[in-house]
Image 1 (cartoon, rainbow, N blue to C red):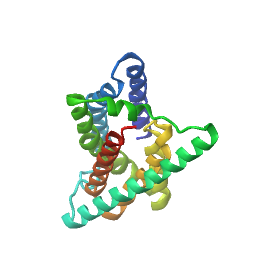
Image 2 (image 1 turned 120 degrees about the horizontal axis):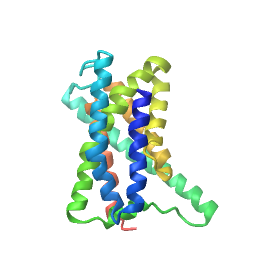
Image 3 (image 1 turned 180 degrees about the vertical axis):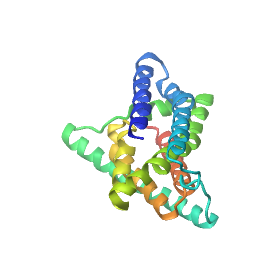
Image 4 (image 1 turned 45 degrees about the vertical axis):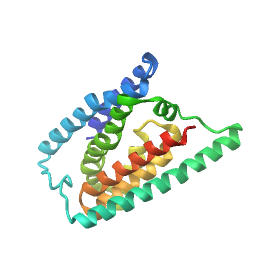
Length: 217
């Protein structure tokens, strides 16, 4: 499993750098590559690993559970993720400002605000629909249970969050994403289902997209 996610995210990161320096719309093409390259690789790795270890869909957390409980955990988890991640970002922004005399600039945020029409719709589809499903399958469905067996619940939640944040390759938002990953792992632990973390992940990503677009700066 370790080799699988190192290869998958390593290749995708290299592809992202290539797109960043070779295209005039790097954010759109990066998310297009996410949809046509990374998502199928994640799906393939999930199939191969589950078959190799004899795990079924129930063991991955592919169950809905109680709808009201799932929805409640999903919405509350999204609120917690948004609050914690933006609090962390504020601390990073403040530290950067005190050290450099100016606030940090996120190139991805600027590119997001420059998107329009079909480009924006495609990006939102990937961020709000595809990313939550495939990333939760991988990080919580596959990776978190393996960690929990070795280091216990809270150790697994922390490590899962750290790796989730690190593999997004966004230094400015890494602390925020680590906290989001921990929230999502906690939701999986509490519900024993991917439904709640997928919902929370989707709502969190939607909130970030809306805040980024509406902030205008």
